[in-house]
Structures are given as structure tokens and as C-alpha cells.
Length: 317
Image (tube, rainbow, N blue to C red; front, side, top):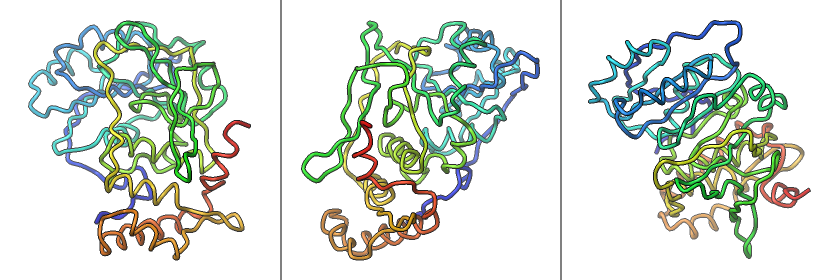
């Protein structure tokens, strides 16, 4: 079983990196963009041109296909863009971690090639408004291909004794949301790094995303909505897979189980038996998971500002 990472760049994968001139002009935005790709680069000339016109400090394009033969040509045509090609299987969260280490700007906008990216998506005055409060993550408004609003507001709740996430299409500037849908958001890079980034040992996109997002709230950071940034999907938006599996267990142990006493987080040893019976993964695996999470919480015990119960109770205040 893989140990729970404590830093965002703890795990490195084999990859190819091509290009990547940094925009050093005085009027360059203090924002870099990370583009997560699902299709071949030859479809993206117009998209890349629009991104370059925005005057970002850096542009990182994550290519999932190591056999994409157009990357060399694209890097010559667009020398400002840094192309990162993983040569082994990697989750989106893990690739975002890598991209965060490749840029130097204070803020990083994570987007996807499945979104319509027009020119001028962020102008200088917008950049200043979006970053002036210095919060951890700013989430844009999202639409489907028919311009119907998508659920971007996620609220924590309780059903019986279980923590749940409720979604809503309600949207107002500055409104709190639990996490950014599909990883799409404007991240404060230093806070992202301090939080440890995405847990690469969690492979499920939903649980990996929720793990970092909930951790950020429990550790005192915030994620809020903005209407200044708006994107529409050009294809069907992804459906979140919330299947309960081993990834869920790791998320649960790290975020839902810790208690707080004397401003220190801990996991009760007595909660192991309840966890084992609920996990359905067998005694040995349950013990390994529980031990790893207990050690991780102990290492980060002073980082927690609240436990899950306090977080849910204070959400609407």
C-alpha cells in the first residue's frame, strides 16, 4: 500500500517536457494556465492562439497521448507553450501537481480542452479582481454546450449520520462552494503547495478532487465562485463517479474521521473497529489504511483548524 504523500511533488513520473518560454513582459498576468487535454494537439491551433493572446505568464499543455506526433511541430509554432507528456499512467490531479512545479506565477488557471476557450478570457483588470482576496481557489461558472447552467455550487450536509455533498445551480459572486467541478478553477499556487496538492495515491477523479478540497477547508482555506470567469463545454460534461471504493476509504480516513482536541487533530484508535466493519476490505487492508491515515493526521495535526462536524455546522454562517 502506498504511503499518503505529505508534499505536492513527492511523487515524480517519467515524462517528456518540450518548449515553454516564460512571458517576461512587464504587463504579463501573474497567472499561468494549465490545459488538460483529452484530444490530439492538431485540433488546438485556435485554442493555443487564444491563450497566448491573454498574456499569461506561462502556458502548460498536458498531453495524455505519448504517441502524439504533432507535439514537436506544435512546440515550434508555439514556443511559449510548455508541453508535458506523461510516459506512464497518471491521474489528472497528479498531472496538475507536476504542472504546478513547472510554473512560477502566484496563480494557476486549470482548464480543459473540452471547454470553449475564447480570446480574452482573462484581462488585466479581471486578473486583479480575481486574485485580490488571495483565496485558495476561485471557481468559474460552467455551462453545457447548449448554454444551460451546470451545477457549480456544492454544499456539505448530513443525511442521518453520513456526510453528503449537495449540488445546486444557484450562483452568486463570492458564494462558497466545496470544490471545483472537474478540477476547473483558478488556484493560489502557494496555498496549493502548502496543502500538499492532490493525493496521487487516490486515482478516482471525484475522491481525489474532494480530498484536496475538503482538506483545504478543514485547514482554513476557502473556495468561492465567480461570474467573471465563464466557460461552456463543447461536448457532454463528465459525470462524477462517486463509487465507494478504496479511494473513498483513503479520502474518508483523511478528512471525515479526524477529531480535534486542544487545537490538534487525531484519529481515535477506538474508531478502527467501526471503520473495519464499514469498509468491507478485510482486516489486514483496513488496518493498513487506518495506520497510514493515523500517521498522516499526526504529521499534520497542527494544520487542522476544524473537524468535519464543525465545518458542516459553520457552513451557512
